[in-house]
Image 1 (tube, rainbow, N blue to C red):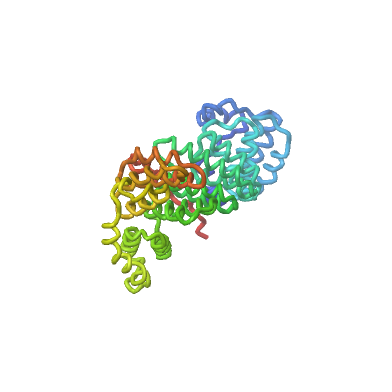
Image 2 (image 1 turned 90 degrees about the vertical axis):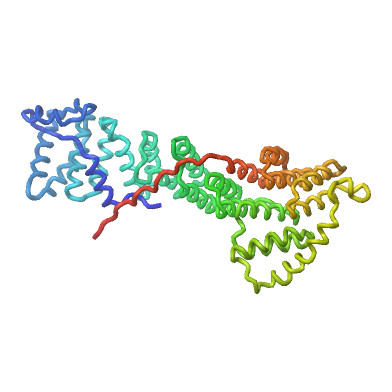
Length: 434
């Protein structure tokens, strides 16, 4: 994360302005009109006035650099608050003239430490102090100053990413991610939502932390805020790292990826097709491979076409005709797993009502895998557009399937959620041209 360059800092400080300072009594009346209301009581002590006058005279000379040692000498003294503030303002002004950012930093710190900086300038001055500390890799100082500026309402110059970055620079990943969480919540409480780039940054830092659970959490937050095939694909991939799944669960994950357009490569489609083929789910084999062809991810010359798709197509008609249409039509008592296997087949043929009936029949049998059954019922209802029923079923899922059920719940919530305005991308920070 880049901090505000020294060149840009000089520009920003020039824009922020400084207090008009006068050391001589006869000039005080004219300068009074230029002072800001909350700084109108600033008074230079009699002891410091000669030093201030000498500094001003040197700054006005043909060689203003002669004022630098005078300013530094003044800053090095133990000063009363008003005098310290004035010394800081002089350092800022002279630093701008000389393009001396080190002197400007000293001036900012002196102004802040004096306690006399006006309320309208406090946010920016704290940010500038933090930015100088960030550039010098004084991460704790930068964090303190940035936080002060942020708490005072400062939102310019990329402060939001810079603030958590001060923790990541110290390998304090939990604290940095907690700071991101705070920043995103604050941004989303405003009329415009936090930009997607912030979610990506937090996700990237969670991945860099090596904490698989944190990565899964932040990948899911990205997908929840900005749903897309890419974000959902990342959320699924992150979730897979944290849980062990069997073949049936893997197929359930692939179904979710297909629903959220997260199947992005030929390998994704191949995995789905081969997983469905092993279970003789011919309808799903055909559906997923034809989608892959339509997206241009599976070529007509691919072995998947001749070795997987073509055989599945030959089986579809007879397979569908042989299926029982109701649980009561199953020969014998039919175990829970048998009922759910039939449900899987109907799900692949988009017979969602029949799939629900068979899953529910399986759930009613002794020894039923409740999480598998409720996941199936929820998936069938979701595909059918019966979102309330789907959410009720997903809410019953626990164990290793719980993260996938939670992602389904999030996806369902997105289908009817109103769009929230996204703030425009801020202009890039100007850089030196020389």
